[in-house]
Every structure is written in structure tokens, then in C-alpha cells.
Image (cartoon, rainbow, N blue to C red; front, side, top):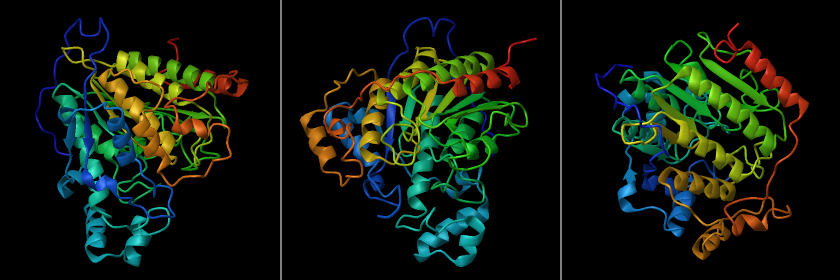
Length: 405
């Protein structure tokens, strides 16, 4: 990455004395309206387009709040990714196929990371959305890139449905200003690609709450003991069926300690929704309102620009239940812009969701509510001893979180 001299906005001494100023930019592109990964892939569902349509059904966005993004240039992708990998992605799209040597070397063109129309252009556009979002934040705003959050991609390989690591590239854009960054990942899967990208950067802290990798992808790493080369990684693997009470308790303790002890200039949040109960690939049991309460905490307590706007970039991520995802990300956008949306979905939104071809969980007791309300039944419960023990171990052993002495 080549550094670009730039002065980050200065936070006024009293910028955090009152409620956060709520205004943000929503990044989007027309190409997200097509399903990218194919009918038999977990990501072969409407996600970003459905979210934007539901936001518009609520009349919760103005043209001035939206920005169309472009494809990332190869030189931008190469801040992290190898030239050979970027070239392989471009060539596969141009030729309409993936050569076997690219499959073997770069893990592309298989079921996990399939070939599809827009094979290079779609992930490159999502990636620039995160770079552009970082620039919005550097200029004094907040930004939401729901197409981003592809946190597994490695420099020379696609991994876990992720072709380019937009999270890392957005952070790199912030780092070009000399800023200190805290990356917070609440996707159900460990943010391994981002952690690896900044293993030797003393000014980036990665924090990930995720499914234990003994039972969830990527099936390695993400342990409490994995603190990064510089003590700049915080990992909490969570047990199956983690409920609202447990997630909020763990999140609140870790976010408060990491934020106050790390003292970041900017915050980047990966807000994958696969931790929600309906998600077919997640193993947790948390509600939409629990998820949104965590995002609200981040908005209110992140470092701020001089006018009180949080220095915050929010990215999408995992999420394999289109209805649960669109409801949740609509709530995230509302929080970023200070809109108080009714829980009851507008009639146009109900129609929109019922038109989605999705009947995977129609026998579940909560299924009908997905089309009526953007919130869920309360999913509070006891905090199990297993989670308490993990938190205790994390706070006793991590070099950043443990108490002095």
C-alpha cells in the first residue's frame, strides 16, 4: 500500500459530550440487482437490492443520501491482493470461464467460490464501495456499504464466498491518513482474512465475535488464544445457540474494553447478519433488535468528528436468509440516519418480502412475523457458564483486555 499524505478531521474536545449526530451515505450500484452466485449457492439470493427496496418502501432514504460506486481499479485491489490473482479474476470474467490452474492456485471456479456473470466486476464494485465509504468517513461523514464485508478473502485466494477483501482495503484507505483503526466483526463467522491482513500493523486492532471454529467456518483460528503477532487481535468464539442476553453481555464488555483501551481514530464494523436466528448457516439464536442494539452502542460511543458525527464505516457481510437480512440492514440504515421506523412493515414492504422466492423455514413459529414486522420476539435467556468461562479467560489472558497487575 502506498501512503497518501492526508490530514484526518480533528475531533473537537466536546464532540462526544452529547448524542451522536446521525447522518450517513448509503453506497450502492445497479449491478447488485442481479443475483450473482447462481441458484444453488447460499449467496444466490437478493441481498443488497432487497435491502434498498425495503428502505425505500419505508421512505427512509433521500437521493442525496445515496452514492453510486464504481469498480475498484486493479492498482487499488493490489494494496492487498497479488497481481496474479487480480489478473486471474479479470481474465476469467473476460473469457467466461476459469482455467484449472486458476482453480488450483486461487480457489476460484468451484462450488465455494463459483464463476458467475460479473465475476470480477461485481466483487470489485463492492470493494470500491468500502474504499469510497472510507473516503466519506475521512471527509467527515458516516457510510454504509451493504455489499461489503467480504472478510475471508486472502491476498492470493478467494475464501468463504469472498473474492476481494473490501474490509481490509477500506481499512487501508483509512490508514493512508495515518489513522489508528478498530475493526469490529459481529458476523457469525470469524473475520480471519482481516485479522491476517493486519497481523503486523500496530495501528489496527481486529475484534471478532463469532461461532467457535470447532463447529463453524473457517474451521481454524479465531480462538481466545489467537491474539495476533502484536496483541492486536481479540477473538471470542461463542457457543451454539447463543441468545440475546449472552450476545449483548459479551459484546458490551468487549466493545467497551477494546474501544477505551485501544483509543481508535476510526471504527469499521462488519455487520453480517448470519448471527440472527433464522439464518441457515449460522448457529446462534439472536434477534434483530439485539443486533441493532449493538450497532447503536457503536454509533453512540465511537470517536467523532468535530460536529459530533461518528467516525464510522459500516459494512455488510454474511447473511443467507434474505428476509432476515433485509429487515436487519434496513434497521442499521435507520440507526445511522436517526430515523425511528415503525416495527410494523409498510404494506409495500410486506408485498416486497412476500415476492421473494423463499420458503425454507415456513413451518417455523416465527416465519409469518418475517413479513409483518422488522423486529422479532425477544430471545433473552440465561448466560450459560460456558460463555462466562470464555469471557473470564479472554479478560484474564489478552494483553490488551486484562487488568493491569
